[in-house]
Amino acid sequence: MRQVGPHLVLYGLRVSVDGADDEVVGIPAVGACMLHQLEPQLFVSSDNVVDLGCGAGFDCFVASGLVGDEGEVVGVDMTDEMLSKSRALADELGLNNIEFRDGLLEELPVEDAWADVAISNGVINLCSDKKKAMAEIYRILKPGGYLQFADIANSKPVPQAAVENIDLWTA
Image 1 (spheres, rainbow, N blue to C red):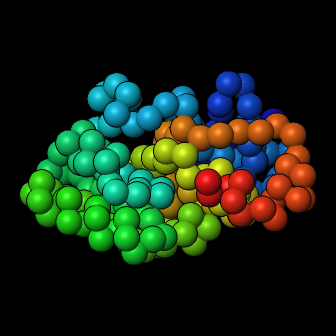
Image 2 (cartoon, one colour):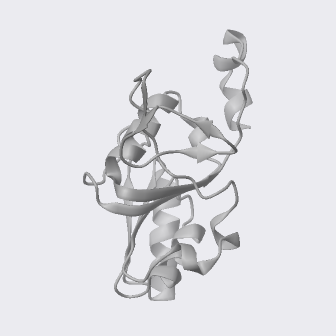
């Protein structure tokens, strides 16, 4: 197998985001842990960071401190309530290197190859089209960029009745 660009390796699992059988294209992942548990040396001052499903912005605020004034953080969320809350908190904290954008993981409002690091805490599993979400994450990462996420994983197919029951996905 030939590696092309960044790759995803989680506990020995390689995941293709482009559907190729003979090549693996993915994103390097930095373990399954929350951002505030990461070691600071994983982030470099001046990094561009995207928080996928940022909610109230907590991980964005931590990332802001890790990348310093030279770095930028973009939080993406699909709910007006969370975006409003995260923007208000960033203003209250005086953080000028964070921007919050309305969007879905399947259609990220971020430029191609902009991010050095993409982070997510419990959101990728909520996406209806995970392959599209992973392809979008790959699109926004610079060559050599990292994905750090914590999420729920299931190696067996989810029964159709469970897929169609929104309460199981959002409760």
